[in-house]
Structure formats: C-alpha cells, structure tokens
Amino acid sequence: MSGPRPLPREEALLLGPPQWRHACHALLYAPCPHRLFGKIPLRFAVLMQMRFDGRLGFPGGFVDPQDASLEAGLNRELREELGPGVAFLHVDEGDHVSSHASEKPQRVVAHFYAKRLSLEQLRTIEDHATHAKDHGLEAMGLVRVPLYTLRDGVGGLPAFLNNNFVSIARDQLVHALETLELVPREHLQKAVVAAQKCLCVPSAGTSSSRVL
Ligand code: AMP
Ligand code: MN
Image (tube, rainbow, N blue to C red; front, side):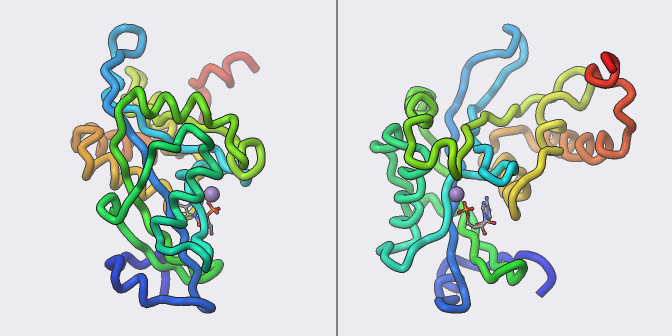
C-alpha cells in the first residue's frame, strides 16, 4: 500500500488488533460573524492544536481496548486534551467524516469527525483548554485556522497550510473546509495553489527577512 487508503467506517472496523490500532480526531468549528481589522470576514472559527511533536493536528488520539466504541475513545481523548470545557460536548457516529488506513510508519486507521458548535460553546472550550490534563504535555495549545487570504495573496490560509501537519491532518482540513462549505470552493482552490507557490518563492519579500 502506498499512502493512506480511504475506506468506509464499517470496513475500517474489520481491521482489528493486534495488527491495527484506531485513532480518532475531531474538527470543531463554529460560525463567526466577526471581521478582522473590521473588514475581512472570518466566516468560521475552526480549531486545531499545536502538538507535542511541533506539528499541527486535530484534538483526539488512539482508541484504547477499554473504550466501548470509536466515539467513546474520541470523547475520552477530547476530555483529556481539551479539559473541562468539553463537558457538554458529545461527538457521535453521525459526526463521522472519513476513515483512512495507513501501513507506515505503523498500521493505524485514522477516523475523522467534524462537529458544529455555537461560537459561545467554542469559546468555552478555548477558555478551559489550559486546564486540560494533557495541556503542556501532548497538547501545546489551541489555534484557530485563518480562512481568509490577505491582499499579498499568501498571508492567512495559504501561509497556514504551509505549517507542518501530522499524518493526514492537512488533507483532512482542506477536505473539511470544502465539504462543510467553510470556505467558498474557488477561494479554497486559490489558497491551496498559493500555498504551493509560496513554498517555492525565496523569502526575500517577507517582513522577517527585511529586518535581518
Ligand atoms: P495522537 O495520539 O493524537 O498523536 O494520535 C494517534 C495517532 O494518530 C498517531 O499515530 C498520529 O500520527 C495519528 N494522527 C494524529 N493526528 C492525526 C490526524 N489529524 N489525522 C490522522 N492521523 C492522525
Ligand atoms: Mn492526540
């Protein structure tokens, strides 16, 4: 097998231990009416987190044999990584988006979920996240994904997409932004192309290189 292989949830569940481990991660998002600098619409607040390994990913983790279901494992992981602010939150089977099986570096089935919240609920999670059991350990802090592109054509979503992402988290993000209609399709496609281009361009014009 070359890369991660998409498969239906039911088929993924047939891949059992000890050969396969299952991991579940969730994208939490909320409509956001605010404008950056009073001008640029933010559209939605979408949460990702900085991980212990320096990469960006979604909250979640490995499902344990003691977990009653994939979703029970996911909700436990969310409580560990996001803390008391998720007491109200219950991600269930209906929130499932995709499953992918990878053989390397280890056999893992990655299940991905998305849950729409109110902005107030999302802010509650952000406010409590530093009190999570795993805060400062596996989870280094929540970030919101910028969904806009600034006038320079790079700042915002294109620059964000050039971060280092764990496993297939970047693809999960881009796919979710499209299918959940969090970013207009044309805008998203342009941002993905701009992200590829700005990787190849020398950083001569960036503010950090100007000060050096
Ligand atoms: P974690 O405990 O969050 O590190 O996740 C357990 C496993 O899932 C690790 O093997 C990670 O490489 C993988 N993983 C982490 N985040 C994601 C993600 N968003 N999508 C797919 N796999 C992931
Ligand atoms: Mn995790």
